[in-house]
Length: 130
Image (cartoon, rainbow, N blue to C red):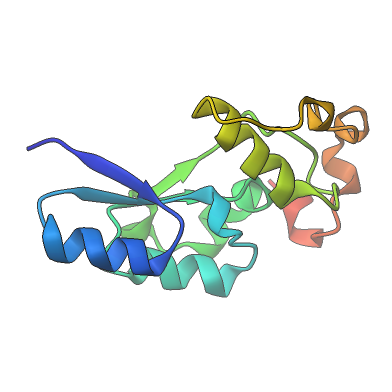
């Protein structure tokens, strides 16, 4: 069977793996993984077939992720707001709800900080490295 589920919570991943072991699991970007350690932990987790990486980490994936784990990375390229946005997680969640046709406060879209999008302004010093 070619079925996949995107999950943001471990309890849901555990439930799906127990009840539906044939379902491929994708770790959602909405988990809020922001550090190298968190990303590596998820990539090594056998429950997940794919881990959607946070855009803050895009430019350093090759530096921080061992080659044997890179095939599990799914990289987002159309970020909904800049990495410097203090509401980054909220923006992701809103966009996810919108994609699911759930009700959201439309005043939150687009991100009010989107005009400030600049790789050079990212607080993560490694982010600016190619």
